[in-house]
Amino acid sequence: MYPKQYFIMLLISLALFLLIVRLIQKGRLDISYCWLWLSVGIMAPLIVVKYDWLLWFSRQIDVATPITTLFLFSILILFLMCLQFSIIISIQRRQIKRLTQQIAMRMEEK
Image (cartoon, rainbow, N blue to C red; front, side, top):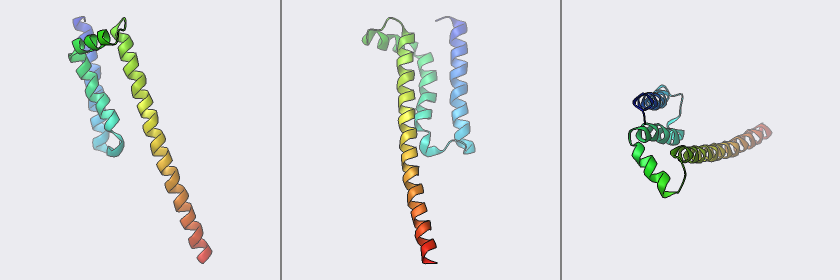
């Protein structure tokens, strides 16, 4: 990897990590939903610093270039985020249904 590429990639990945931490601190990203984002924020600089790990893993799964491995990881992360959002939506849907039923029962009592 060229030094300029290394520096820019490291800068972007550290900025991503700092953004995630800052959003958690400000309360804009809830702590119960941030674990996947934190893992992405930690792995991004780690992949840049330990690029040989990416090369090793790429050889282990027999892909032509490390970019393919990064795309594989990206698709996996997107899948996990979709799954996390689906779980959250399902839980909230059940809570809303239960709350509306409770409100309806209280209105009948009056």
